[in-house]
Image (cartoon, rainbow, N blue to C red; front, side, top):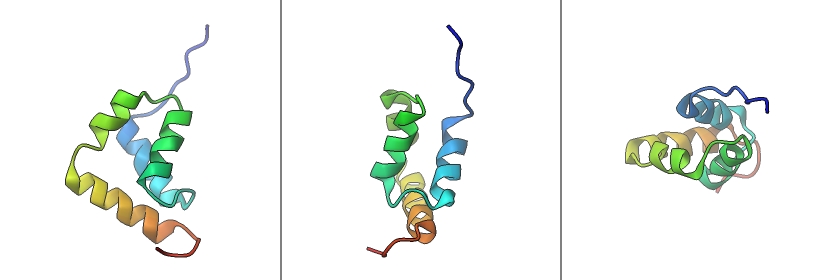
Length: 68
């Protein structure tokens, strides 16, 4: 079976948040799950309050839809 190569989860989370493809952290977590990051990896990555705030801000600033 071929193993999928993926980058560090934190780096990928920043890429997704900046891309404008996700509105919020829930959507960001869903994308990471679809990209085969484990629920535990995702949970541990987003434990920090500062990181969650930074990700929320990036998602909000880059998402082209209506602002909440």
